[in-house]
View (tube, rainbow, N blue to C red):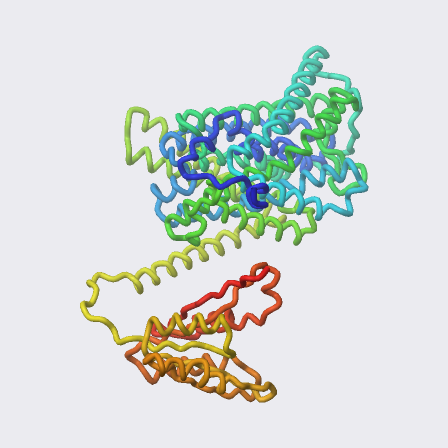
Length: 622
């Protein structure tokens, strides 16, 4: 087994794709971690904005959560329809492109790609941040821990969808189990106490420092909407599910939405009942809302630590949703020619490896740029996510209008309502979070759109240039002139010269001499090359002796080849480059690599009539 097989697994044939497809049980860890993890920071983001109101702010968390859950249900119903209508996947991008046009599709794709890039960075940093809060001695190593987590996530995803779901299975369901126990216990205590349960560990209190305002409520709503990020993931990855893929994808999405809705509702009810308010994330006494909730409901015993551990792991792994969907969106966009073609190809484990690696690079850049502390990026989540929601549902309105059918009118009304609500939410989030960084998204999305159109223009320009509709000409072109580069008489150069003599009768051997080096090549030329060729009745190659006073070898050869091409405008010039291939990769460092340099410069500075022929000689000795 090679090292690559050990790390990434053996290559999978296309015929093995069915074994890599998943059902709802693995679908939740693969596509649902971001949405489920948002239950840990969505309510807290809203509560943090309500801190100035003190305990009075808790009166608004239930209505806010209800409005967010209603929005969640609308988005769920829309994406359920999207899965049925577009079973090949693609989500917002495919729906918007096919129904609203190319620009709308690329706008949705840009929003999603930026959202996923932020999602991966924030998911990892939030989980590691929670870990360093629990173990302060690890705080100086925050960035290193983030990058290690990123590398592990990348390797796991490169191993394939099925293995990813299997590896993340236990952490996902451990988190869901802990949340279910905590919420059930908390609700039971709340009901039995008449709505006023006594916390086992009393949460800290906060004094009111400001009066209520509508603007404060709007900002809290905008922050709470981060709980909906990741909901679109299943619709993008329908192709990863086994048959019946539509039902399996819909069930997976339904289970994710159900779990998220229950957690959002339960957290809202219990934080109000137990009087849990958010604490300053930058303060010394910071505790997460879930930490205070677990302590208030069950105390600080073994269950508390298991539950907190499950939260830490899930938050760190929530970045996996980005790794599952970012490459898929890139794949669909690349198939339409708006991203590099490499994104459309699947790698050795039937995953879109290039997309995974590019996401890793983007995420590493964000983590390094922010030192592993990316809390400032959290407000930007909702902009990309809700813009994609809006484009998807607007596209579904056009879809039902075009397709018709028994329930087309009802479906169109539902999607139109969803488009209006999510569109309004986008505006609210942009206005409320503009000064906190939402302006970055408003710059990044147009920049990405510009890049996509530039890629498409490049491909169209190349296609127009190389496409042909005429038959092959029935006459042969003039024979080529072969130029063999040779600095000394060796087995490597001898093999290259013999290959050239088999291809053409007109051969020029170019030798560059340097002032400060002894040179007996001309003497050897007559003895070893010219004389044997004459005796055998073969065409004698012409020796071209170039002088280099500046100790350059590559440049004189390059200049000679270009000059030769100019002197013979109707003939092809083939430069034959002998090259020694070492047995060990590190031995590459021990040689000048002039062959590689010459080859590169010929390709960059040459023209259509200058070709390169590499003749390798493989080192035989160990």
